[in-house]
Image (tube, rainbow, N blue to C red; front, side):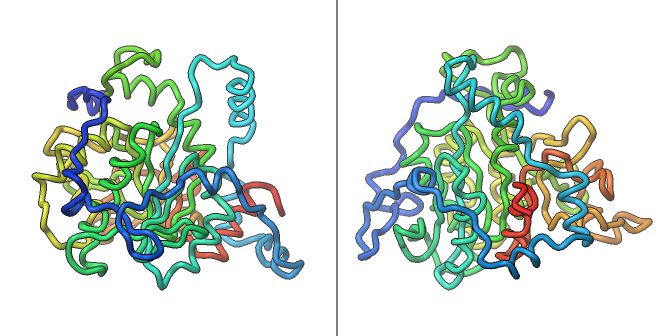
Length: 364
């Protein structure tokens, strides 16, 4: 809890910093006709979730094939905690829970030419989020993509400006409706049930309340939490950031601090691809440090690579000889690396995304 104690509590009341939506990063989004002022219905996917179905028997055979490292990690270690998830759902449904279930807003970023990557997300994990939106370069209401213009060109080397505009849009339109906000790219696979249970755990509830007592729901302020896979930049543990690959999760206090206090003063016009480092740098200036999200067995919950990679990766004798082992913080390796109730994986394209979903949710 020493990390939590460094950050000052943040008042939860919404503060309007949009400035009338006349300048970046608060210009907002455009509709399908290019008109500003568009507000995406982030609940549409959860209200009308598409079923997950195999295209045919040959796809089922391919997706359910056994024996490779991805299959091994997803059947021998990582699982979706459906038992506790369903129990929590029943308690909430019958009014037996002390608190309402946390509401999670999921934000994915992409560009128009990669819109074919979005249907697999919608068919698998996206529909499990309470709110879901894809920030892109073209608005398509049916697909859930939203054009959010930003300062500078639309290119990889300017993702920092894209992210500034995305988070500003989320804060301006959805801040008061959700408890936690997760962001990742279009090759992210998020196990939402595990994430929700983790965020509802006593550990995280306590941390969000300063580490002193559990919140009761009446709090007017909150301790910022910045959750994800911690990396030490260049091996320097004084420069921790959260890997953007599997994404990061922020509570309301962190999102508000980032948008209201961070963006206006922290590299507001810089052009760079390293948005994950930039977000961490801005939050660090306000004493918000990445939280250690390992489980009780020291397994990592947020995975920057595919499941099989984490199973088979072996660091060199000198960890500094490989960037990944050099950046990693107090990790176990092999099957012990990933938490049983892992939250997120990266570099998951369509076939593997559907395969992971089929295995984890027992379609195979």
